[in-house]
Length: 252
Ligand SMILES: [Mg+2]
Figure 1 (spheres, rainbow, N blue to C red):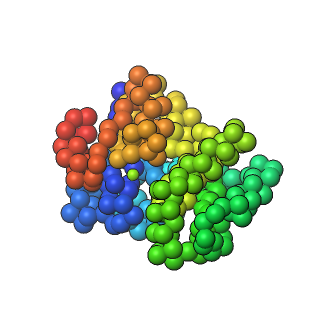
Figure 2 (figure 1 turned 90 degrees about the horizontal axis):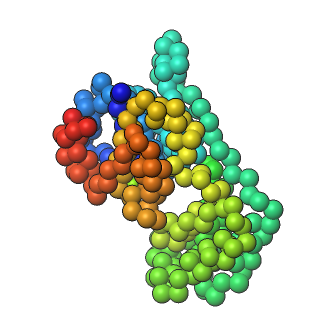
């Protein structure tokens, strides 16, 4: 039975949305040499490349980006002659159900919040990102809305109403001002049904993340893995915790 390792990035291998610590980058690189390692992150492939560096990316067996709504593998995993090229193995397109964008527009116009900057929903890989204040907001305007929302719980209220209307969608409050809207199950846990289902029969799968608690973006995958005999999830708070974890079994 072999070991397969999956890592979240923000808060697990790097500080949130920042580059990896250069010393840890080297430690992680030498640790991963003889291991089967995958990345499972909410970030886009290009952002992950920037955060982790090309060497770590090249030594993975695959990269699940955008909440595992896209999966990339280096071509030499499939064909050694085409090394250094990445293949897009799958990508989930988000096709909004009828009337969803109309509902979103009506929540924007009905909201009592005073500043609406436009660009209220953005189609991303596998999801829509929605905000009342709008994506054109300045940092100060975003901050103001975050204060308003923490008092009025506007996002929570809207998400609750939308959930009643669109039962096959998830509405997840993320960041300070927006919510992510996607089809149920299109979170990090989809790596199991899409890719590791067979592997879990004869291999141990270890997932390390910093948001494994309920409502965190690692929760769904941790839950699915912990239900399986060979699945394990480990919670860390920082990349320093991960560095320490790598020195202990079953990582060392
Ligand atoms: Mg994280």
